[in-house]
Length: 183
Ligand code: PRP
Image 1: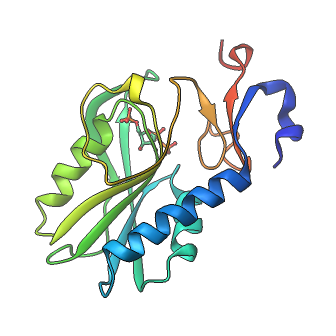
Image 2 (image 1 turned 90 degrees about the horizontal axis):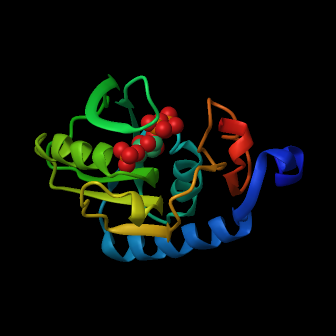
């Protein structure tokens, strides 16, 4: 889906498909250097990270494995509560593995802070984070993130995996959602 397909729902284009792909290539080159000679386990956090995972995994010239987790960090509201429930756990044993968590966005940081602790307690050799987006102004907790694509303003963004009420995940780029859509 293109921006023009949902033009009335968006207030501003933040990142085009080309800008996202260029950044993912830059992150991939750094990951290739840092993990040279290693087999990395990429852990995607459903559902938002699907697009980043698909593009990052294909960009990497490294042997990788993929696994997926689904967690719920939101109660009834739209704010992260910090109380994280595992909806789907990993299939892989992390003992001795080099783990790279792949995320679409770090907002309050509560989900990733919890996930880092959880995965590090499973005996992995290392656990690091790669996120396409981060909202510094929304941070409630500091998270040690090794790879960040873009720091963005604290706005409601959709596209490239990010949704509002399950819509807009298939938008090719990332845009700010117009307030009338969620008001
Ligand atoms: C998003 C995102 C992170 C989390 C970040 O997922 O993918 O997992 O929120 O928020 P935080 O930093 O405030 O904890 P979401 O819960 O929206 O689910 P989704 O990936 O299925 O859209």
